[in-house]
Each structure stands twice: as structure tokens, then as C-alpha cells.
Figure 1 (cartoon, rainbow, N blue to C red):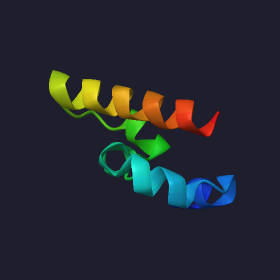
Figure 2: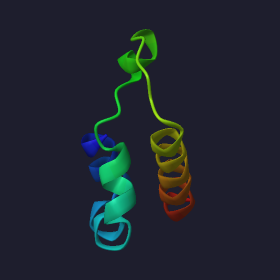
Figure 3: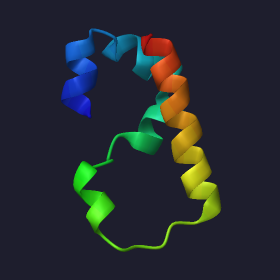
Length: 59
């Protein structure tokens, strides 16, 4: 995720304005979809909301 943000050219903006949201998603790994794990509803909602906010900022 860090590299993607850097390549987007928006790293400074996102980290300055959406740091809470960035910290919620920065450790995401596409391989996690194959790992069975329990996630609380609150954590899932935070992740989704954070990802949506960052995407809106990038677009």
C-alpha cells in the first residue's frame, strides 16, 4: 500500500489529511482474503469507510 500511495503522488496529502484512515488500511494485504480470521463488525466498517475516504481523495 505504501508504494501505491507514493506512486500516486498523493502521499503527503493523504498522510497529512487522512492519517487515521491511512493507518486503518496501510497493512492490508490481498493474500489476507485466503486466511480465515474473525474481524469485528467495527473493524470491518472502519476499514471500508477509511478506504472509501482515501479513494475519494485520490480521485
